Length: 242
Figure 1 (tube, rainbow, N blue to C red):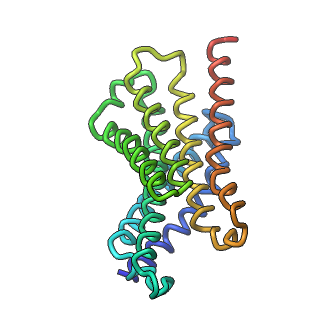
Figure 2 (figure 1 turned 135 degrees about the vertical axis):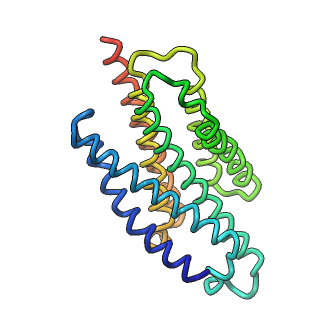
């Protein structure tokens, strides 16, 4: 199992590094252009693999925490060590789910455009409901064990999942609302990717930062939410002809 974990982690890191760079190409190319569409697909396909490998890695850690991370635990309090490993794995598992669901929703919204009844298929709704309920469950874990990251991303994920569900079932949408929804979902996937990188990939570098590391952990979510809000208002006004 350790070998499988190591191979998956290596693949996850390589794909994740590529996705973090690919995210910015469609972000800065003209919307609807050939480069935007092409690199947007590259980013989405890469993120599917990143999030999928992340889910598998977290499941392996949850199944055998000591077998994978046992060398890092003190013999004095093994139970607490196992609990901490599993709590962190649950957090990263949810971030992977958030990332995968956001990319999937963003690409589907772009594909169906005004035909939103296609978003109400059981498979897609399962992803969205799982994201919403999972966020509430993560929030509960955070409150019970006093984990700030779990609380913040539990609330964030539940709101994102609820908004996606609302979009699927809303009776009427404004002209080109699907474009704003697509934009928000793709930026949301970037929030998940950069959060996972900072909390997992760069946590050794931030280990000595004390409570300041929490600022780095939540920064992608806060910045991303502000950007989504700003662009949504901007494009909504533009599409309304104001």
